[in-house]
Length: 195
Image (cartoon, rainbow, N blue to C red; front, top):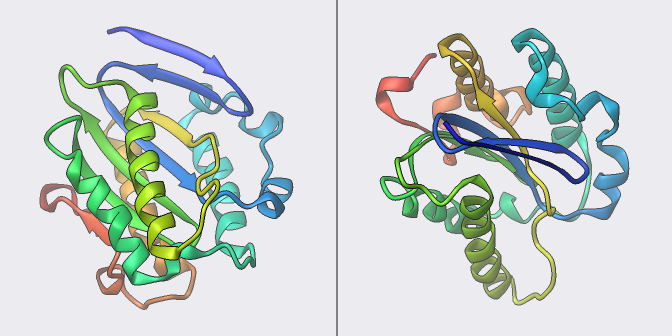
């Protein structure tokens, strides 16, 4: 198993196989000031499952509670573009497990396929193509996605269970629907449904 570690604002530990949980958000300078990327998040891939759960919930609540006009993914047509990009790479770069698309961010879980291009390249493909298509649809130019994503290599089935349950319930916790199945931009591969 090959691994790569690098750091910008957040640390990234990438293996060439396994299951990954990734959260990425729209570029919003006001949110960047409010979302904590200090020492609390600098060792995210070294945290225990319990520590990870606590810190990630804090991060995600900041994303859900931030009020901004940069919420393009709230528009179903825009969210659909991103959803299609997730599915375009399924069975090519990864096996798609689950995702949810919120108004200003998304969560995705996938298992890397043999011979994949690597997490950095996969995220470049998702963000790059979706940026082109979304900007075109919105008749805008400029940066769409925050440069870095919050990523974590999933260590075991217990952690995977927590992650899937958490992301599927994200729209419920945000008060957008009563049941996760009602959210149009929730997806979970049948064998992984945990609720």
